[in-house]
Image (cartoon, rainbow, N blue to C red; front, side, top):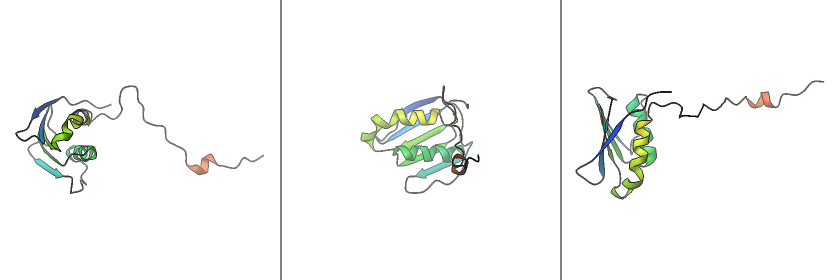
Length: 117
């Protein structure tokens, strides 16, 4: 469910920066800036994307319209770039192909209900 985002990557001027150009706008005309030192509390798509990117180990994220600028340690980019592209591509994907949501687990009291007899 959901629609994948197409991502094109460009190197930044500095070695610790990469720019990810998307085929859709995430923010309209507003700029969203995040750093790993601050907790991201919002519920909008840029907020969720920043949280997911920080979980990968990046240090700063700026999102403006259809452009995502990411700062991460220069030596970490070989491992991070693919993960970041995948994270952005699948931002709006709720279930991957062949995967369904996990069935709800019944409450413990239902599992241990005494048998009358």
